[in-house]
Amino acid sequence: MAASHGNSARGGGARGPQGRGKGSKAGPKGGFRSGPGKSSGYGKGSGPGKGSRTGDAAGRGYAKGPASGRGKGPGKPKAAAGQKGPQKPRAFAGVDKYERRASAIKEHGPHRRRRPKNPPVDRLEVHDENGVRLQKLMAQAGVASRRVCEEMIQDGRVSVDEQIVTELGVRVDPALQVVHVDGMRIQTDEKLVYYAFNKPAGVVSTMEDPDGRRCVSDYLDPRKHERVFHVGRLDVETEGLLLLTNDGELTNRLTHPSYEVPKTYLVQVHGPVEKGIGNRMKEGIRLEDGIAKVDDFRLVDSTPGHVLIEVVLHSGRNRIVRRMFDAVDHPVEKLARTHVGPIAIGDQKQGTVRKLSHTEVGNLLASVGM
Image (cartoon, rainbow, N blue to C red; front, side, top):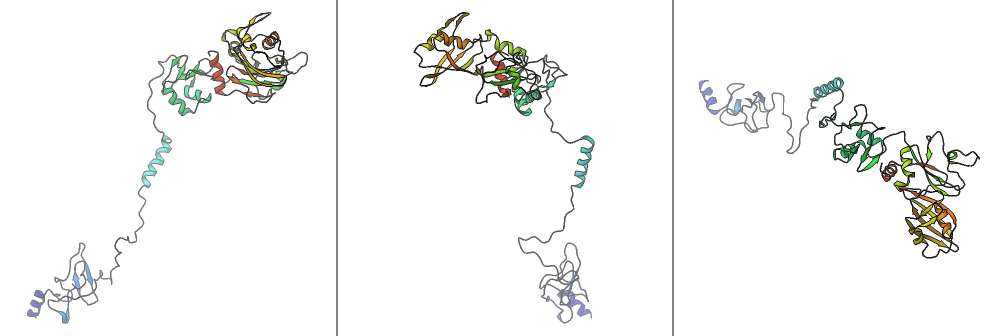
């Protein structure tokens, strides 16, 4: 028995039914594995051909066979190189984070991106703490979106009462203060309205007519149009552009001769027209109430027996165009006004009323220094 025990020890064989020989490999976690050849090792398990032998196979030899499992039969097959084996579902680790965020939103409201702090605006004379934010007022006036208006303010393109404003917190009174963008005034008072009326021939340029003739008010819908007044007049037989507004200051400036607002007319007369008529009108025609002259004279079209002429003048005297052409022996057959300052009648149908755009209002105000 002693010799047998010694040989077994020197040969690395098993020391009894479960020996601890050299053939066994100790793994990181340890354990018993048994192979099909009744060999067992103490450790992680023996690799192929390195298990210890018992019985008739005692000695220095090692049994060759497949790797043994962990006491539960053959081990699990290994995944091929480059392939991932089945993975267990991972727990959602961010639940707590989202719960905290939901709790914070419930307590403090949704997160908003912080804007840079602006300098105090109370020091500015144009600031009215009870007014409307300047960028909001500009957006309502149709200048641009509120975000773009903020950029325009920061770029120094906006002035209030002739003072450049670059702070976003400024508030202004729309009814009392004047706002300019790039030098052009914007109309901030929503109570003021501006319309263009294409007057047909035979309509009287009044809001009411005691004789029952057609007048301007017949073309205004009281449900859609505010109470307005006509700017200047067109005689009964003259058609074309007539401005309507409730802005008294603008009306005064458009009709006052000192502002010299140009007006453009298309005049149809009996032709042909002698050369030099245009130069005579530019130099001035003597009328019963003084000298009258045109700023521009241009032949537009001609047909047998008729000539179409475009004239531009800034005088607002009564029937001035008809009287000038009578003075040069070319009575007017048909007359239409196409422009008043920067406002054009365009392709607007006769007898219709349209609201001027924000850009048109700004150009009109700028033309009279407002």
